[in-house]
Length: 193
Image (cartoon, rainbow, N blue to C red; front, top):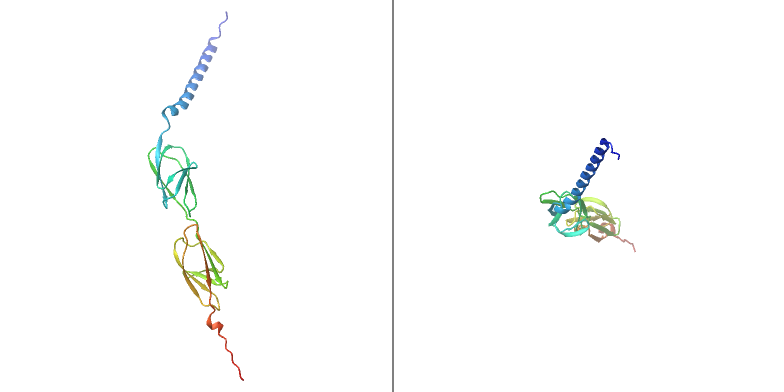
């Protein structure tokens, strides 16, 4: 009978011990979270303005302000807030071990104001600032604000109209008829028999 060299058996025993230790570490890494579960927390979501629909990972979770339970600590979640008249706001939230609050600021969509005059080509001023010539589309006005619109055209009487800018994402159209200026429309007829 032949005996294996002593050094070789120590090597095999060491390799087997290392393999068993690695296997136990792998089992522990996979089993511990399943046995004890991931730590979960609550996150409070608040939006400006309130009333946005909140989606986490593409699923609706409520209307802001809303508290969402069961989020895994340290895991990144894609969050989307949606509200009519405002741009969808997306961000990634990674909950911490203690309950927290996430503030989401929604950006309003532009309100659209289309200004026309009859006849066309009138200079448009809003609150004293010249913005262009009719027909004119404006998307730079603050939504839900009252403004004064002035239409000016040579040969016509200046027309002023108060306008309520529509809500975010909405539009309005104004058509202003212009009257001929009497100074330009006077006709004098003289005749001698």
